[in-house]
Length: 221
Image (tube, rainbow, N blue to C red; front, side, top):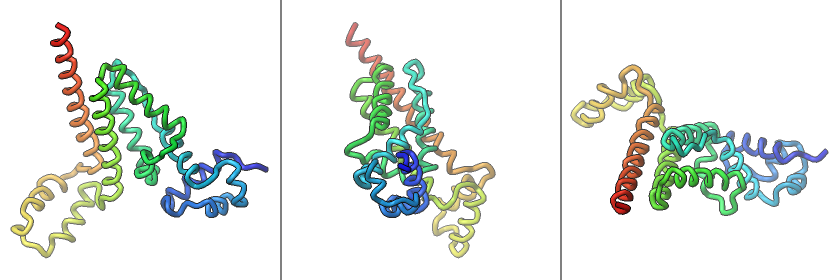
């Protein structure tokens, strides 16, 4: 019985999430599926085509509504969904923008994003700047969130006790002040920093957007 393409992609994602992209090979993928490696070549010529399929799959998972009448909320929704996809699929962070031959779902996602900006009245320049800025933030936060050894105030308290137990307060006074006065307070969460940063960026984009509209009106008048 011929194996379905969707089953191959699902198995590749499982391997990538478990051991990283470097561990993904045609041979190992075939072994996981319990088929001959040659069976994979009916769907994919090589590993690079499988990676393209993984990227396409990841972009298809992003859930959002591109609404030019509320572009700010649409972008917020998209960034949160993208972050969720990256959290669930750690391999995707360094892969999503690396494809020279992206799939149709990938292209459609980018086209939809560009369309949201342009239909909302963004200039070409501000569209380009905003898209890069948002993705740089989401991808960067995803990397940091995955790498940081702490998340909440309890984690930070444990780490601080280990790091600073042998140091006098005068050695790193600013770090100690932030830890005791903010990071270790009940309710702190590193993950919650995402919302604050995204708000700052979206508000900044909104200001640039309004500045463009104001200048356009001045020129037309």
